[in-house]
Every structure is written in C-alpha cells, then in structure tokens.
Length: 324
Image 1: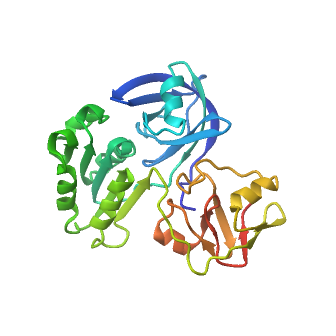
Image 2: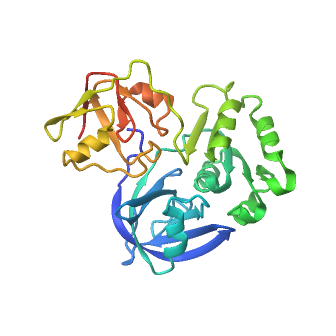
C-alpha cells in the first residue's frame, strides 16, 4: 500500500481555535472534545473534513507531528469553490464540531540528507511539518515559496526564523521572479537531494519539466486536482471485478467506475474526490492488471500494481481481483 501504516479514525472533533493566517486563509486547530489523544501522523498526511453527507474535502495537516492533542489545517477560500472551502470559511467557527476521517498519507517524506521544498500558495501547508522533520534529522534543506502577494501567503512569520534557507517570491513584487528562481534551482540535479512540491497545476507542471534531468525518484508531488491521464491502447471497455472479501463478482461497463458498481452492489466503499486525487478509495489488488488513471500513485507504484484507486482506474485484464 502507498499509504503510511498508522491508525485511521473517523471522529467528531471540535474547532478549538480559528486563526486568520493570511488574506483568504484560515487555520483551524481541531481537538477531541473530551481531550483524548489523536492518532499519530507523519509529514505529508491529510485528513478528510466531512462537512455534509455529500461534501467531503481533504486538507493537509500543517501542525507539529509531536502534538497528539490537536490537528491543524490551513484552508484557502477558493474563488471557484465547489462548496468545501466556502463551507469552512462560513460555517466552521470556534466551538463548532466537524466529522473528521484520517490521517492518510500519499505524500510521505522519504529519508534524505538534502531536500528542496517548493510551495505555491496554500501548497505551503504540507511543507511545514516536512521542514520540522528535516530540522529534527539535521538534513540540509531549502524552500522556495511563491504566491500572488505576501498578504495572501500564509505562515510567513513562522518561516522567518530559517533565514536564507527560505526564498519568498511574491508576484506583485517581482513578476515572474518565482519561475525564474525555480528554474535556476532545478537547472542541474543536486546530489542526494529529493524535491517535494505542492501547489497549483501550473507549478507542478513546471517542476516536473525542471526535474526531467534529475535521477528517477527525486521528485515527489502532491496535486490539488487530477492530472489528465490518457487511456492506454490496451484498456478494456468492460471487465469483471472479483470482490474477494465479499464473495461476489461484478461487471464494470464503460460508463461506470469500479466504485460506482461496487457501491451499487451494496459494498461498503469509501470515496471522496472521485477524481483520483485524495486516495480515499485505494484498494489492494490481489491479482489482475490495473489500468491506473489516478494522480496519487507514483509511476513506480503504478508499475508495482499493488493498489488501485477505484474511483477512476480500470483494468487491462479481463478480471481484476480486489480486496473488497
């Protein structure tokens, strides 16, 4: 499995604190109303906020992994919100209770002597615990953080103490300086260095292109939205899914996903984004050849064919046996 092996829960948490961290960004501190400890988590993890039965969104944990008493998430009010960030900004005040699932990690920080962190806008959130972890191990690290304006860039004060290891690029101050500096940083592969990037799609594309000459496995990305994936020529229009734990076999037609068919058959499946981004629907492959169309698994994980995101992925084999 690509996710970290720690305890995942579904629990009602209280908004203990709500802070304005930048223009359009609020930071929520969530805690158990009875004071119970929350599960451990690792840098890069996210949680689901279940706002209504039909509205669930994922947000990166941005607090300290050492704190078991609370979880912190930073949330940007998206002008094109499909409901999630608008709900958070309008409804989640201090004292409010919200259903939370997680933690889950599809963006884990691998051990390395050096890191180059790249953040765009609210993509800074998973970088904060990663920097804490790098500091704890004595790793060498640098961060380049871009945004439209300093006033809209969260957590700048917390980053000030790191001095010149952090490069801040505000578009209203220096135009395309962020892209210019980023290109310079990535121009030549750096020895024993891993690149971690989170932000809007344009930034991720630029970083992918910039890292083409870097060794395989150097680049690690987390996406806000699904990457366009072309269907392979050997993808099947219709295939069977054997649900081993449930003891039933289902037929998946061209116009439905594995998730759709499994849910329609009454199976207890979890899903959220339905775009192959969040990893909530990840399922173990027991046998068969998955046609992986998600934006969560790395190329090597897709090649290993051990898990599949059933909300978007399909099959290249006539039968796919899954742990469902």
